[in-house]
Length: 204
Ligand SMILES: CC(C)(COP(=O)(O)OP(=O)(O)OC[C@H]1O[C@@H](n2cnc3c(N)ncnc32)[C@H](O)[C@@H]1OP(=O)(O)O)[C@@H](O)C(=O)NCCC(=O)NCCS
Image 1 (cartoon, rainbow, N blue to C red):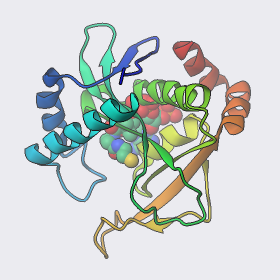
Image 2 (cartoon, rainbow, N blue to C red; image 1 turned 60 degrees about the horizontal axis):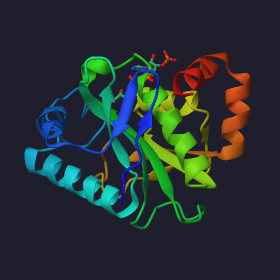
Image 3 (cartoon, protein in one colour; image 1 turned 135 degrees about the vertical axis):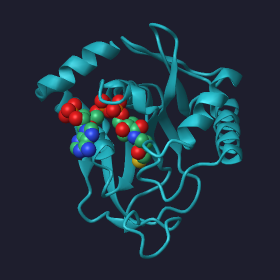
């Protein structure tokens, strides 16, 4: 299966290469990056994570893309969409479920990269894959991730809060917020929000 690649003004979203493994392992061991996860991601977990992502690219041609800066070619993390194959805790949502997600090295934060790559991923999901809806979720404490969801036009499903089954009971990270977006929502938000117009210019 050929991998779809996405290009924005500043990023190439592509399949993973062996050179990405070491910097991705380093991200998993960085407390800043893993702040809203229950624990750091050990080397073998990161290797397994990449193996699974690449398997998805082989099967479908799309997934959580490795994000590389066009200038300098640095690998900065991942941004993309992926199907949720396991049972999802919020039953009001119909499958097939596709989620959007991101994880970047700390040095690359707050430059709009996640937003830029996420908008390109949404566009691919709606225009190429013809998806009806894309969801996202994160710990209610993860303000930067929530901000990205808002900036790309996702709406919080107020009835969709849930306790993440893989986060232990009693952990302050367990409560998760659910955000959703349809193609129509995306169009409306992008038309009326000036900062998103800037980001949209970056991906066209
Ligand atoms: C979430 C993440 C991918 C965002 O990447 P990014 O490239 O910095 O995102 P952007 O620059 O597009 O936008 C970040 C927004 O969050 C805001 N932000 C950053 N830190 C914040 C904080 N502590 N509280 C509130 N908002 C914050 C920024 O100001 C910016 O919003 P603005 O454009 O309105 O100013 C990045 O922080 C990350 O990799 N975090 C660790 C991994 C992770 O938690 N992934 C998500 C798991 S669900």
